[in-house]
Length: 163
Image 1 (cartoon, helix red, strand yellow):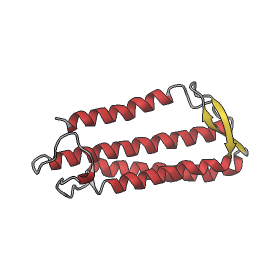
Image 2 (spheres, helix red, strand yellow):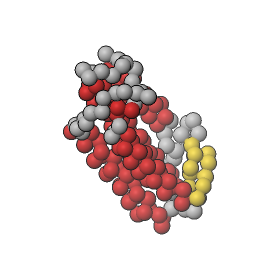
Image 3 (cartoon, helix red, strand yellow):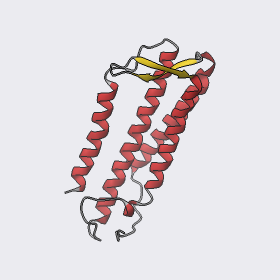
Image 4 (cartoon, helix red, strand yellow):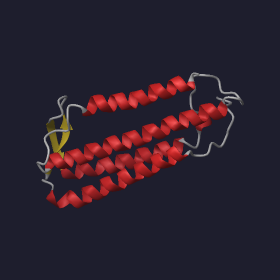
């Protein structure tokens, strides 16, 4: 059991901005899905191969999962923000480093939350465009860019946490 100090770390302006962006993307994703529902074919692409081309198809109802997953991730990561004293840290937490460690880990959480929501929002938008024959595939670049951004963020903040 950890004995890390329980501190209240107020949200920074960047965290508020991330929350606003994430909520806007979630709502826009849901609105776009509802708006495009009637024009979607019964079968939509739900899986893409390594080159970004559709290779799996499913019911258009599956698209509701994207905004639902985004909302679940948003809420879950937002709730985690309330318990930074329960996180696993690479260094022992003391009274002197607790605020820095908590704030830094909460910034990491905030960046990851907005990056994941943006990624899911883009994927849903792209699937709908593919289903309507307005695009072909989701792009060869998506997976490498998403991995670099997400893991780059994690590596950046981990190096800050071990200082």
